[in-house]
Image 1 (cartoon, helix red, strand yellow):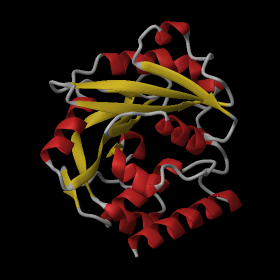
Image 2: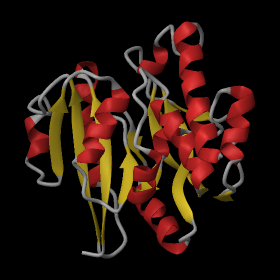
Image 3: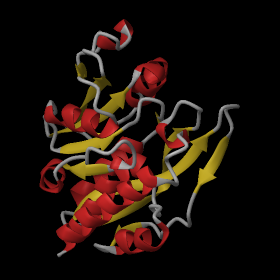
Image 4: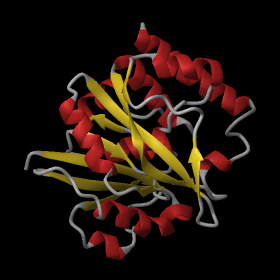
Length: 244
């Protein structure tokens, strides 16, 4: 086998019902010759047995669990069980578009100076319609190291969607995995990767990002208040230290 990409998925009880749809989108991916995937599902506050039995018949699906620690801890624990040279994030309630994984792999194979990829996103609304998520998508292609952090520093919002991230495993290790934050841990990692390495924005839509009331980003503390201020402060301190 030429390469293995590890799909990392944290899940809590309310999102378990979405896993079969996420699996369908993953199983339908066509990868470059010699590549395969493994799916590390980490149940936050469980032992992995909560993952639907039908998914566990696929030997590429590797359920696990750990004490309740939030999404950042669950992601890092899943990554700790992984074996791939590339790591792709996929939230339990989201859906990969056809070809998304292959495009990530192709870019990272063709551009050795690029450490990570992200792609265009459509929000999947409760009524099934799709809406373009954008803060002003960058041009497709290479993203110069530090540019995303400069954007985030003035807006406190990432210009691209961290839920589409695919990263080289050794670069992820250098960044230290995901920060132990109650939310925004994916943004924190993206900012760290941005100041450590060039990235690449894939113009084709790579993800349908499900919008629903139970998601972490729907919480009242996600965009304001003391928790938000502390999260932003932690992200800034970590990223600035790495940049120096």
